Image (cartoon, rainbow, N blue to C red; front, side):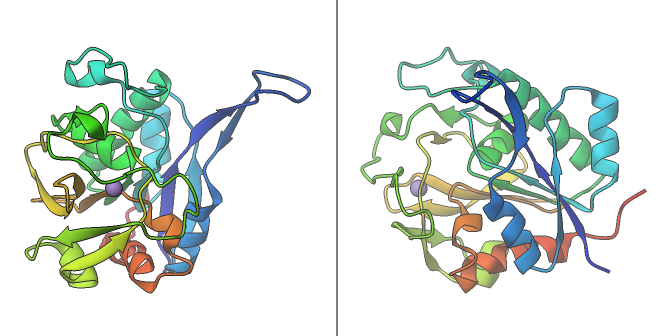
Length: 243
Ligand SMILES: [Mn+2]
């Protein structure tokens, strides 16, 4: 039986058009395509902040993908906003935080992508650099700014990891982030870094599966078999767990 994969949504606010300021629930279509290519059935989970609704949303999926997007509000890890911080959305932080908490309680596997990886780390007690330039040795361009499917920098992968079983010791990743993980949350380990030591992936050590990637495998999965394998790995960890 195919697994049902919930993808955390976001809110798009119309800047122009007939009703400027109008809000739309959405995810980037590459998430949908990647889940289908990897053999899963995608569902978008729309943003809301009602605990009972979020629980019910999760009860109806076998696994959770945390999608990319806004910066994580630094107040969540006890920092004031730095001048280099980008746009945040508190509603989404609240939504993602509850999704993560309940997914752990229900032992639903998690794949966190970019912002999804960052908020996973923060919700579990870790911290972020509000901009990669604040990391002491960072010199690599981590926001390539164009051609999403094109890999841009090398990642070194930790041998003792799930990621290593599919990618080996090195891979090429795209890069569309400006925040990055600083302190890794307890219960997680670093499983990939860029050559400037910026953390590119984390995995949960015990219990239900959780993998976070700082890059966007969904943007590469149609053209890069290795990136598709990340979705296949994630789906292989999902069990039929719907109520
Ligand atoms: Mn990067």
